[in-house]
Length: 223
Ligand code: ADP
Ligand code: ADP
Image (cartoon, rainbow, N blue to C red; front, side, top):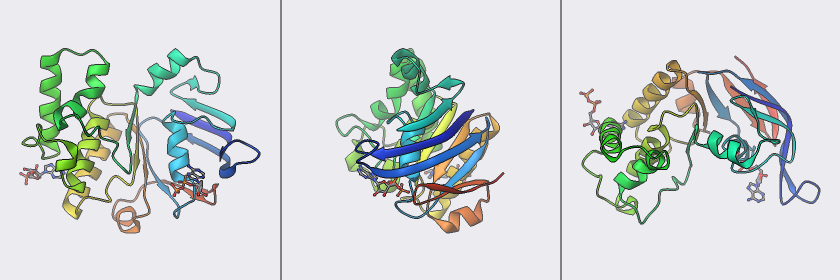
């Protein structure tokens, strides 16, 4: 599904920059759920940025869904990006669009028919319990509600790879449980999922193989 070989990443360029990731090698199969663990500053967000094609590794080999990312053409990367769903810690919702239009965005980019889009958006928003907030703007919602909108937007087009940075930090325990159930089901359906967190309680409650980073190094990778 995705493979990293000897990947390093430095902010601000390879030599002068701050090393955020050093010599990471990883191999994650389709349909796996992995926790991404490590204290603040360990490199979790940097790793998610590489996997989401936000940034390019400074060195090493990155292969996602069979595509060698470092050598891929722009058009191939654009196609690959559409198979990757992301839930960012700061949600990254578009403030000027309604909740409906935020969640519909990935489907509109796929040029899906509007009636089909409306159907899908209503279904997913019902699932996250926000079907009555479709006309609101993101900033009119609570943090937990915004997080659920971000999750809905990330999963609505059934991405092959789902990346989430602290997706439960604004959710209460019940909502977090529902989200974990959703992740579990998506993984069963073949989505590979990587969830970064430093919430030990949730990791204990929902045990799964982990990728653990410390100071940019891989310190644990078990199945
Ligand atoms: P985590 O997500 O585990 O908290 P990050 O990937 O955000 O870790 O950070 C890894 C390292 O990269 C840290 O040393 C951090 O200070 C540094 N870093 C993160 N973002 C930037 C940035 N935009 N510019 C420079 N250094 C950064
Ligand atoms: P039931 O108790 O019948 O199983 P649900 O657990 O499906 O009902 O949903 C009950 C309420 O929880 C919904 O009406 C909605 O407001 C809220 N809810 C549903 N899905 C989510 C979710 N993913 N995250 C947070 N709240 C949700």
